[in-house]
Image (cartoon, rainbow, N blue to C red; front, side, top):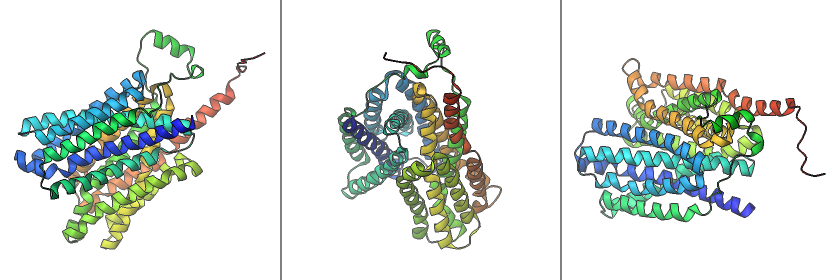
Length: 408
């Protein structure tokens, strides 16, 4: 069992890296595809909204399918479809086909995203210790791999269609080979199913998500809105606000991303020692401090330090929220993860737009103070992670049912 569990963990690492590399393969080819199709930056921005909406829809569908069929079935299918549809943007000859291609690719990638996170919840539960953050770190590693491969493809003079087809073929093989190591689908333990649940299932009614899931989803939206804002505005902040050269400003996002990846590699150990609530609360506090430094400092070196602290603080927050959503109801882990991930993804898409809108009212660095507020709210609400485990223990202690005896 230990060997199969270790293999399942490795396979989950592979799927996270695959998801990151597929997204990265699209991102690194955006300039070439934009030039070939002949669209403006504004039009491209609208197309990226379609990519996000497709991902959101895919997450909702895959969440329910994962609960019904199991991650062992849905995850490889999501990996194969996401890899196969990567070639569509590279082959699109005009605006409308590119729009359809991004919608389909986004849908399939959303399926992969939710199913791999749902499987990660089950692996983490089997390990009985925090390991979710390391999975999310592998997503970032996959993006780095895609950037290196994309640079090699560009230097070799290959077209985007050939380069993306090469990545897609490798992705399909990777998804199929890794499928055998995934954990088998298992029904939820009978002890966790009440008579009311049984009556509801027999009546064929859809299980209503607990209110706690929506709290986790709102927190994920706030955290990922902050992350999305950093992705698009960090370099522009150094260039436009602090007057840094373009070559120096480019390192702002690199500093943020490197700190986030490093934090995710360390967050599991911190969570194992101090608990997920501490990771979320103090991570959000650190992120609030970091983005506040960015908002008020006139010095470039201090801005770099602020972006690094911002990334380090945010790094462990989303994995804790995903993990907690999967533990609320093991029988509906896929659907609950899809709700939290879906709303979080919408937050990430909204982040750049919200900051952009605020720049019509205040300077860019002052607009970042909204992110300080969101991080502060997240820190204040971090007790929701403790509430779930505490409630479970309280229910167990207050139960007066005699233990079930299986022997004489």
